[in-house]
Length: 237
Image (cartoon, rainbow, N blue to C red):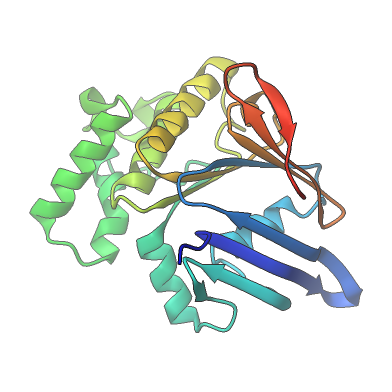
């Protein structure tokens, strides 16, 4: 029997002083979806991202990733999931200034223990997929912000993880570079990746096929977007 790739059931995240960052979130995401999670500061979207990315665990409730309950896994097991199942893209590019583009892309592959020849081939392929085959020897200081973010995307996809989790990937970019990043994410989606995009930018979110709006730690809206008409069709929240 098939099951959602990601499934949250009545998930809470409670911090000190009874602060409910998440307050009973239930959500399912199927493989191959392109989902944008939006919301104001303090809405819970960043906490939700951390749980989806196995960076944090729920206070209570269930989280299943590809059918596996992850809520009670050890830190080592969560790290293994992050290294093999999820590619992360952040607002800050998080590139190592002393390394060139291909070396930055290779870095996570080193941690996975891949041999040098294998990881170099994967890094070159990833950089080509984001349109930077001519910048492989450039260091971050020699590239624009948009190019640096594309290196960060290449780093996220080099190991070919099924899930791409992008946290405000256009936040530090101008509108043109932001549109380029969105186009890359859409292309990855069409190639079969599951894309989860965290953004405060409604225009960027409109490029997804589904929008989830967070408010006060809960899902306030969950809707499918029509790509042809750019209109929203209600979905059960």
